[in-house]
Length: 453
View 1 (cartoon, rainbow, N blue to C red):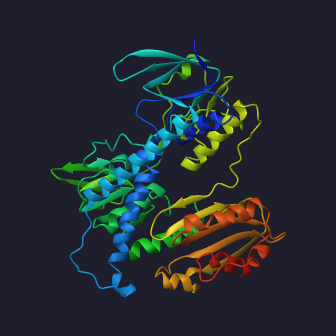
View 2: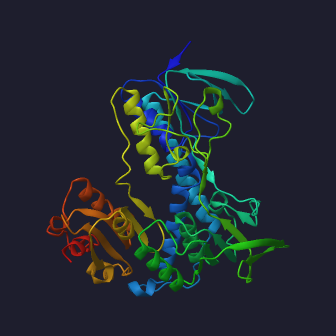
View 3: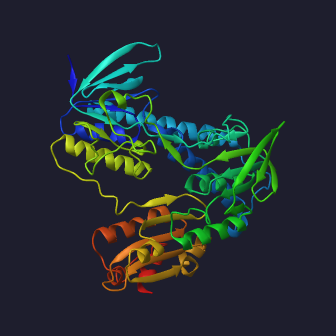
């Protein structure tokens, strides 16, 4: 009987990174997924949405071609089907890349639904209902998440859709209502607005991207309004009614709106059902996520969890990091998870990059706070690029000048923010960051100038 060092249920970033890392330590892993490798990130999330947003970003710039001294034929248009086709090609190539990594590292893959039977046995049922058992010394649950839905908004894939559908539509909706002002809703709102939809964004809380620094939220809402995206915050939908080819939306304040589609973007739910957790007594939290400690271990010995189903921070790069922590611990190298410096990038127009504490959170923790800020329009590179919207904001401690958080709204902000990650990780003070020479003309000068301010 073949016994693996690790059996992974779930082929997303958490699962395949853990398996590959273990292979580097001469341990045998097998990954089980009922579809294929890559998970939501590759097939329905990060990569598809960024491919589409990149397409729309070029279309956005073409509409401003005259600002760059370029005259274009005005007959160019957005072709959603072609965008989807190009996106699918990118996804396919990246999927092949993961399979090649598996081949090169000796990681096995089996397609089917995995269900834990015992602490060292996973049963796999494939598409033909054939059953096989996989034995392993360790099990990693990395089953990911799915779009969260509400009973009052029955998903039909046509009039009421989720982000899974939104990255695969065949026609540009004339009028789109996005229910949820988090990062998923805001990114897709930008995309569809740029290619021709009339977009409405509804957020029940007082601001868009409410988990980020309030200055980012305020700025993004202003930019959305400039881009003709209609934003309603502190607003709730009380009911919907599908009428032929339209959807009548009713708000709690009595107003009504007619749209062609509603995109439900109110977060994600963990995939913790139907994988045999009850067979071995794995503890599940009230929100459906799986309990784990700082080593990513569940309450059952030799069973680990990583990625969205762990419910810590539902981002692909966090899932990969968690998978690495699992691989280290299985290999006998003690490793603990550290979420203190997780950067996030939101690919709106302009982009958002954020790491560390917001101003409000730093103050609520009792810290003496100093704010440094520089507007992107003060940079020569921003003017040369015709992307002057945005700012760099650094939250630091007034007592010792340590950097507590960095928040950027700018072209390429999701890349730029990693300078903040490195500075905070290295314990660099804000004055030291300001005294580091930055190339000119670059957008990263904004970080230096914010620190010097």
